[in-house]
Length: 130
Image 1 (cartoon, rainbow, N blue to C red):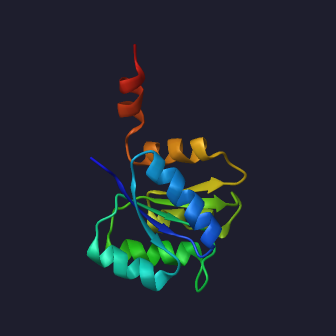
Image 2: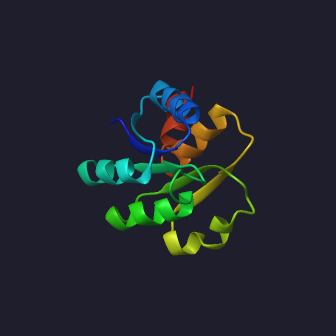
């Protein structure tokens, strides 16, 4: 089953490169450039994961994640290219199932983290077993 990822990133180049990477491993990507688009998407679809940048054009990534999680509780959140010392780390307990993925990173590492959060790590390992 294809996983649906809601990607919120205001930077068009980052959004496009993450879309290409996620789609290359079989994900369906709902790409939003601002919180208004992301809210409309999350009302119409049920993503398996919210992927958000630490700073969006009109609010912090953390605030965006909290807002989106209110609409779809329980969906894991991956804050991409966050700084480990970011304030969001201090507030993770408030949102639950949120991970910070600090930069710099390789795309393969990000995909591995996404799969881990979606519970696919063990399934992928089983497929690669001899």
